[in-house]
Image (cartoon, rainbow, N blue to C red):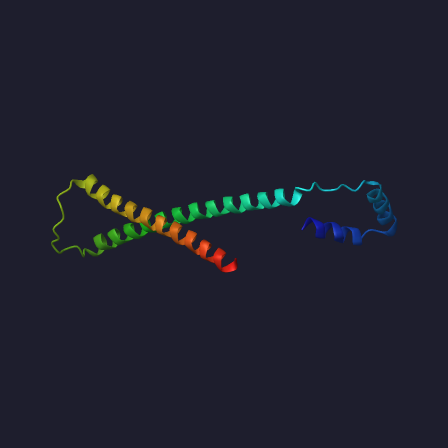
Length: 134
């Protein structure tokens, strides 16, 4: 974006200013990039890509947790609002907090299992894709 701006600015300059800039750039010695420049740059790009992938995974996991909590809360609220749970269900007699901790623990186990399955599937698809292109 900055290069486009500079090119437009250069094209709109009058010829005297352009000549001055050309002479200044001709006076600047040309620097040679080190031989490891390309490998170092690619390493930085890979590190940045890994960082972004980790951030995206974390965001996806947080979104999954939030969506699960919202879904469970909406289901409980709608059942309470509609008065549907009028059937008798044999539920182990827990006091109020342990009952919700029990269901919270079950949801947590399902979330962890889902996360592990997704990691396995992602690694498998990447490995399969690499074998396909090799």
